[in-house]
Length: 162
Ligand code: FES
Image (cartoon, rainbow, N blue to C red; front, side, top):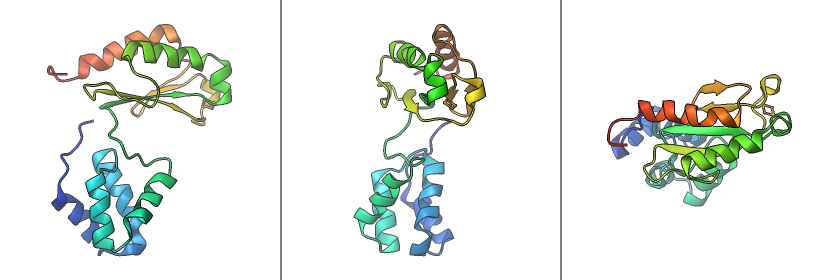
């Protein structure tokens, strides 16, 4: 999943597609998040200006909904479920293995921007606990021992310069 470069034109097009209607602010932010995989600060400023909504209000929406993020996520977003079923089945060890393997703490991204690591609440697949996701790909009944292999497979998919 490669991210588009931030473009004021592209954001204006998204805003125009909702006729710069302030009632559509949530939908506009959703499209921007889908496009860039996060909500860049410049984009929030543009939304605020064009929809004539105070920037603080735009930030409020952007931080209220958990699927929005204000920081760029890595090319590979690794999420480890820490819900109850996953927790009792070894999720903390999986998260530790990810932190070790990637050299970042949960909530962080690797310096090259290739990976981000998140601990999440229940993903709704408790029967397959513990669950780890890499972008949209689920790894059911995950184990800490399999973490290095999964990370290695991701690294193989990265362009040479990463
Ligand atoms: S607790 Fe992990 S999927 Fe429900």
